[in-house]
Amino acid sequence: MFVAVEMVDTVRIPPWNFQRQFNEAIAEELNKKLANKVVYQVGLCICLYDITKLEDSYIFPGDGASHTKVHFRYVVFHPFLDEILVGKIKYCSQEGVHVSLGFFDDIVIPPESLQQPAKFDEAEQVWVWEYETDEGAHDLYMDQGEDIRFRITDEVFLDTSPTGPSAAATNTPAAPGAEEGGQKKEAPYTLLQAP
Image (cartoon, rainbow, N blue to C red):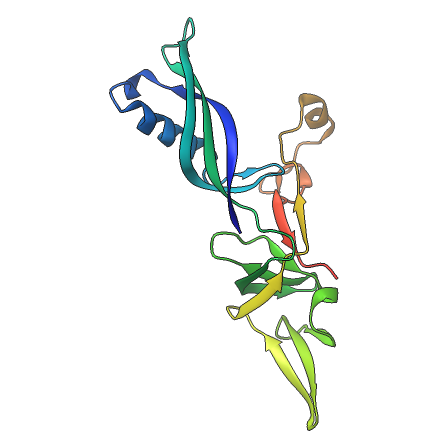
């Protein structure tokens, strides 16, 4: 579920942090930059694990900060395919069951991956598994806040980088209070249980 990923980045240390220990200042800047962010095709960054190598620092003209190329390992949430996780049901919708792990909410179990036969109860906004026994069928509700086990079968990374000025120029201005550009905000990293 969690992996240590080797990364390389150039870290800028502003002059007011020169009095601090160099490694502490670099660790703080790396955590500021990466913690709780999704790195495309890597996963959700959690925290710095360790610094493996520091290269020479440079101060550029017009900028009093030091710039150092740093090799480091970062703890990343990136579950393996077919890994079984335990989460809590956040809510149910026609698209499926939405699950939260507490720190990560973009997990969707589509209807075709639920225990069959399953149906969506519009009145209560929950999925219901119609469990068959010798005594007849029992309805087992997937209520909000309940624990659920699920297997990761797919992951979707969505590049949410800003678009260039040419793409922004084609969009018409949005009305006040409306979502920008009329687009729905997409999650950059989603885990799925597919059939």
